[in-house]
Image (cartoon, rainbow, N blue to C red; front, side, top):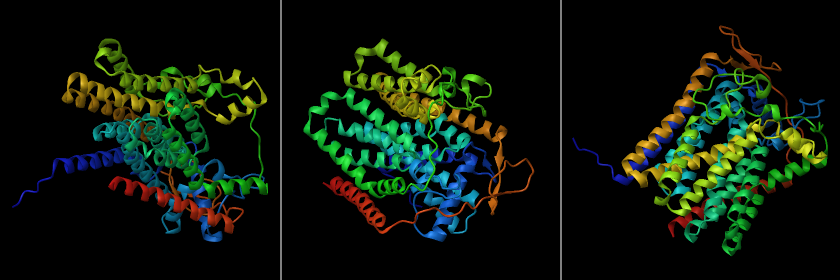
Length: 494
């Protein structure tokens, strides 16, 4: 019997694929059941999927608002929470798959996209396969992402997290010195920002804010014409990739057939997390979102996990004890990741004086109230500390040798997987759950243990079917995406 020999390069590819598949499986474990964990926004997400299905069946390709929500003039999910990716479970529903299974399949797809996408982004940033895989493990299996996925059922932000590493990869490529790598920067950045814009508008806003901070830190590179060329290409690509979405928003605002309840003067500081919650090792199911009032005991399991405290500690140890053994650029990148991560953590905690900022003016009152919960800034901290973890992995390999570096990397990934797996197990044992079947009821109550399957609503069609100009812009967006892919293939062959 012949023995099949796999080339070392191919063996590495197989290891990477298997690693990402394992991460997808571990992140999706709560989905291999006959129920759904009762996340805070689960009902809301199921309503959105059902509304899209109804709209596709009755009105064809659709846009903008759902009519049965507010007064009942409608609410524009497609504006605040982009519907682009929710067409996937909506098509599953049209194919006859029940709403619970459609939602579960979609979450598995999200986990797979996060694992493989973050690997590609971190590999591009560090130019190393195993560093990319470590970044994927820390990011995909982070406590914060698991919290959003199952405790909050926050589909918009979870979808945005798929694309957040793309934004960083694009920024790093644009501001790097190598012209060969820089040529792909605008594609990574534009795809990342476009995906976030179509998923969760607040996440898009925070990504832009921290991009400005990143550019300010790298202000010396802004003198280079090549950098501005990449920035211009990115801006143009974002506009073309999203021209149909932006047109829909403008039409929605122009039509005015909706109700706006302005949010202003709503304090949010008590919804920030306690510092202890940021870097705990064991997170348990909880439901209280006012963390300042209820303390940690009944708080939702939001945080980053002890793995990132470990990465911070190791980086500080390397800098203060072996600082001379590392290059200035490497230390600078680590310090920037640490600084941005800690600043984002500060914004997400009770310590930041959001209620004082709210009182500065009418503008700040509206902006602060729109944030709703400061812990949303932890998505930026997650990305920054993932980068820091990858940097410490490379530093450990340089200082103590490749073998010890890999042992450290495995330990880091293991610590992150352990914390999130503990949270998943705790949610499965102690969190509420629902079982859903297709039906015409208006709402989804919580299922009691041993109860029958519960019905989910059919919410009605959306207002405002797409017009001819929207279809033209949609074709432009699709062609732009195709050109980006063609550009990548063409340049790689050169």
